Length: 265
Ligand SMILES: C[S@@+](CC[C@H](N)C(=O)[O-])C[C@H]1O[C@@H](n2cnc3c(N)ncnc32)[C@H](O)[C@@H]1O
Image (tube, rainbow, N blue to C red; front, side):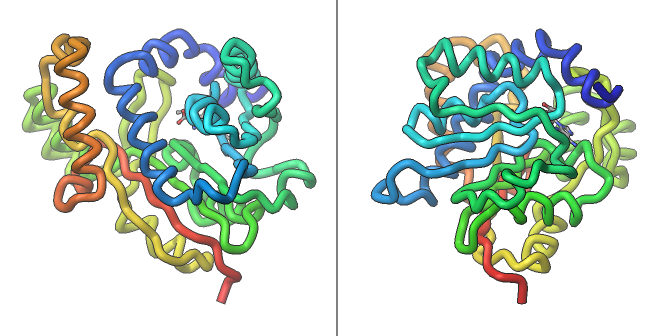
């Protein structure tokens, strides 16, 4: 296993705690809602490819809707956790786990003609964004749906100023595209929806939609209150109402872009 993959595997416990926390739950719920609004319920079970799908946070939710999901990741412990979660949820038959680097997909996946491809929270870890997005589009059938998610660079300075009460560091973050993830002990590259959208269009995507994930949650500093079920329910409703509403998506913690694949012009 590469050192890079090893970093993801050793952080499993912290990652799982993050997913269970209110802000983790919001991330998956809002992404699912945004995806489902573009999936035609009458199409029946879809073939979905979740690139760098980790321990299956998105895959489980989509399999619970009766879709077939292939999770590709290069970190074996992540994939083992995905398989375990699928089995515990009675969804093992709908989730296939494949250990591979997304930049070198096995031929049967690269040629897979999937209905939907997810590329969620991979871009902060790659150097070649256009190449990664091209690799994500290759296994997607013509007219299929791509969903890309990443940390929103516009949120960085706000996050530091509001949560850490550190305006001096926030000032430097205004002009930086680098950040550090404590969970995975890695340097991240931060992007914006405004930068990624033209890349998608240049690769032949059309009808790109921009959603914000966690427009409010990360700017409420009382994290303990978010565990209160009534408070969480109100927060989730607010987040869902704001996900596609300007200006909130522009400063949300994450951006999600959906787009339809066309042949490259
Ligand atoms: C932050 S996690 C996100 C997991 C999942 N997409 C989610 O949002 O819940 C990043 C994942 O990307 C995987 N990853 C990073 N670079 C990769 C690559 N080149 N090929 C395959 N997996 C990769 C890591 O192993 C890790 O599971």
